[in-house]
Amino acid sequence: MAVIGDVRALGVELERSYPVYVHGRLKFRVGQIVYVAFSLDESVMGFAFPKEERAALVGGDPRKFQMPSATDLRFNWVHADLASLEPTEARELVVDAWRMVVPQKLSRAYDLAHPDGPG
Image (cartoon, rainbow, N blue to C red; front, side, top):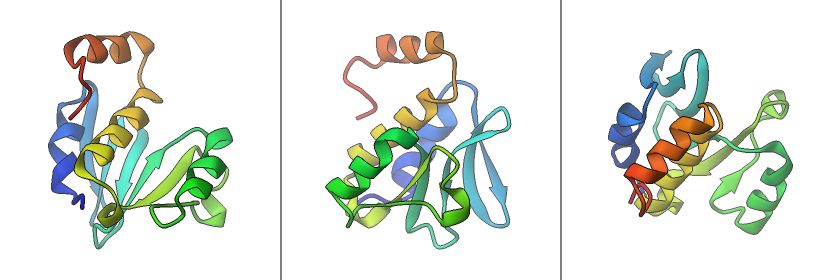
């Protein structure tokens, strides 16, 4: 079972990433782009994810993953129930979301520095 503490430190240490609180909700940004956000009760993690792949992700495990609200369908975004994720899986989702908003050279540098992933 993952909790927000499993990914908070990772979101801070990823290059160019920084935390912000908007209306009491923790979000991680690169520049002005939000790539991870948590619900107010910290039970749901929204994260950047390719639109063309999200139906397969949600369909593969609808207990873990949900589509975003109708108003957010236009964005590259998916929701995950944190309690249904393993801590390692939650960290991998954060890193993959971060990869979507940073230059490829930063993503490659992360892979070199962390050959076994975010663990």
